[in-house]
Image 1: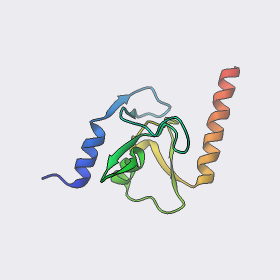
Image 2: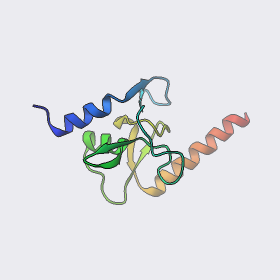
Image 3: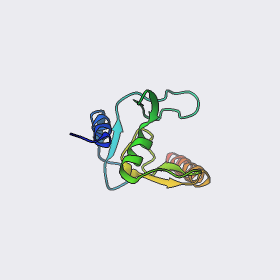
Image 4: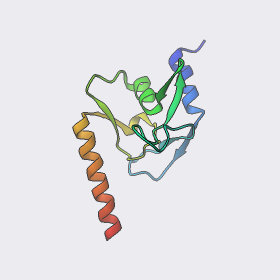
Length: 115
């Protein structure tokens, strides 16, 4: 009999597309299921139904693989891909670190476009 953790992992894995060519050495695991939509908080992040509620899939996968996320910590997508749920692409950071990394990534993208 499988554990609850294995059942949740299997549910997530059934909705993934593995994509090479990211900024990291390992592929992104792109969620092909529903997202939070294009408006408001949590814009376009992967969502899934779990125990009657809606959960962010990247958080679910991180907790399954690495354990709970303490208060005042968030997950940063090191690959800069919101729909990626590969736990190896997620890093626990403070809100301030997450904002700084986001701003640096945007600035870098603008510089590449201008070049």
